Length: 201
Image 1 (cartoon, one colour):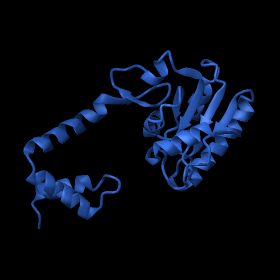
Image 2 (cartoon, one colour):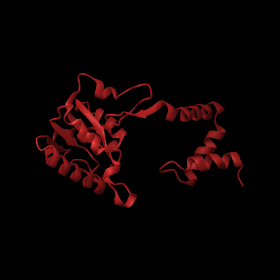
Image 3 (tube, one colour):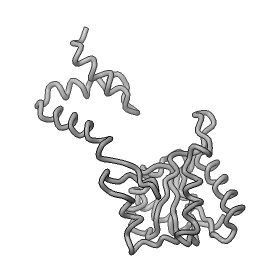
Image 4 (tube, one colour):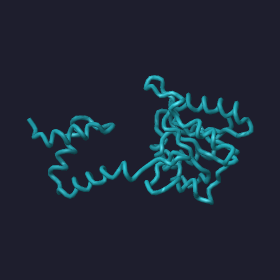
């Protein structure tokens, strides 16, 4: 019963995570009622999204398309001998807001999840191991999410690191992070305490 153009927008918005049918309808109707300039700005930024963003070939953090590697990796003031491993790129920004970590990062690109068909081979584990010698890595901090998938991934990483690089110190963020909460949604106080109280595995 809705005009086709409006229905198309509702269906497109419905692809976003956490956006159900009713929410998609409200968003679409809001855009229709608002100035066409807002819709144009949103459309232009979405068109430029994939052309303007890419993954760092070393850390797999998100970077501008014209950058070669992540500025956080290239920064001479960062300690390359310490790597903090996270599941997703946005987790980096959650840690950075604490202003306590001065090392570099490595993004796995997810966590092991047999139900979702995600195996260890699909994560950037090999690339992490390849960084250890060139960067003279002394410590790897595992900061996967405190979920079943995150814990399974952490255990696998711990096992592989102990087997292949026994001299590298492996630590895990302290268990101050609540179960079921993604790293990117944790507050700064919790993240600061977790970083400060990390434990050796």
